[in-house]
Image (cartoon, rainbow, N blue to C red; front, side, top):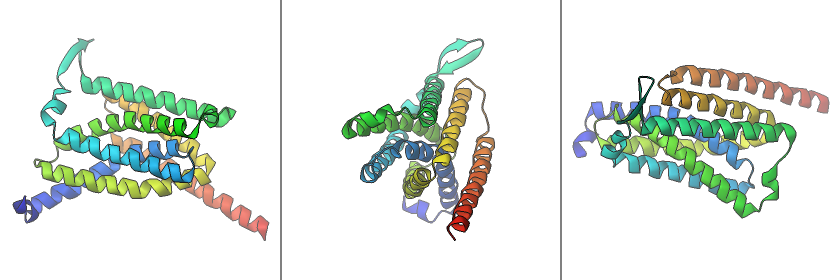
Length: 241
């Protein structure tokens, strides 16, 4: 462990792996931000803390069970000449979950049929935390399987995961507030979830979509939305004068 602190290669691996974990964590931040936007501010903060704490626990737990985790890539059966393993099934199930959840949230936003408002606050909180757990599992497995191929020392992997989750926690609050203050951005974020869901299903089916394309599309769309938000703010300011 001490030797790693003076090893430039270890620091380079830590920086690279941390950056990758932060990028892969964008999906999780968007999902958690949308879910907690339904809750009161104090409960939303607790839900974010619980969600990201679970993400950290899952990632570290998976890192210390590398043999079992890599076993998820062992072939279970073959369909049309394509090998299928547990990781593929988990990614497909997670992608379908995001598609269903995103579609339901978009329907609620358009129709205004918010059944969750009628539920008790504690029940709504429990449901949201449960949904965060489900998608944390999917994102954790996908993230750690990728990380295993990038670093040789588990200490570096754990440090990178802890730094990335800390950054995700700092970013999740502002993202949640921005989504709450600007309702149109929620539809954009939900569209991102649909896009991510399709990418997960494609990965599980053996058709890898380079994440760079997806993140570029997300960044471009977010940039356009920021311009729209600024334009609306300027129009309101001129009308108020």
